[in-house]
Length: 112
Image (cartoon, rainbow, N blue to C red; front, side, top):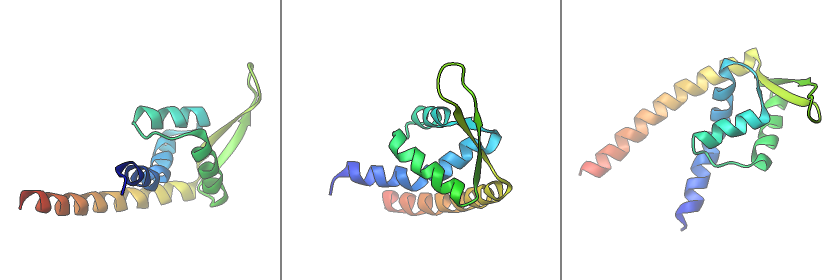
């Protein structure tokens, strides 16, 4: 088993949570979302993020608006819907519980 595959699956598993978290403070353009993910060392490409944004929008968690750009095509800005904010709140609770559980298990295993 290759470690890189496992690492990629772990990152992919939290990507939705991270994107919603990026948008919790307001709207963002896709390249801003990608930049935030890259700064956090979540190595992702546009081909991964665009379908995920579409899926989140189709699920009612995101809205978007178009804004004209002076240097190119119009830009699509994403923001959380009220449903998305509630969903994110639940994810935060779940993440905290999961993080506690994983820390407990991995700490017990490494100290024995």
